[in-house]
Length: 216
Image: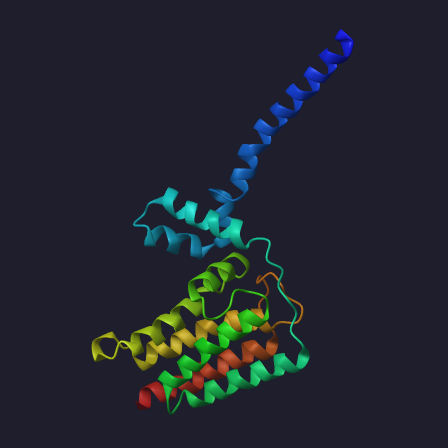
């Protein structure tokens, strides 16, 4: 091998190494700092708060979520399955007037099942499923967290730990946005506003159950 060829190869290797050194920080920035803030929105602030303001720890956690679940491909729902899920939500909404705690538990279970059907981790692994949902549905995933916490508080058995009717109503209202995202036929990234039917459902649920709360 001639000296000229060796020099050319050395120049190529040095160029590749230099390019990698330049691109590495950019790649890290895509899932860190401002990139994470843009991707997770309010979920970024909630994660920082859970880490007592430790931004680095929060970004490390969110970065791990992206690495673990960012490549997840959401599966479409069959029309029949979508209608079934919508019917179950409507039933829970009607049940709320007479049994808000059971209705909230039904919604918690329903969200987990729909997420599983869309290709997210199984409902039995709530934490893992939530993390994956937060990567792809960051704008609305907090509703699922609120509903799940309400159900957990009810399972503790002490009156002090149980959520009130108004808190359960608000949790279900917020969870509806995630539900609309998950069953939407044309929205796979969680950034849409949901169907008009879903928005109407939220409005009806809110007005009807404010009356229920006042009467309780």
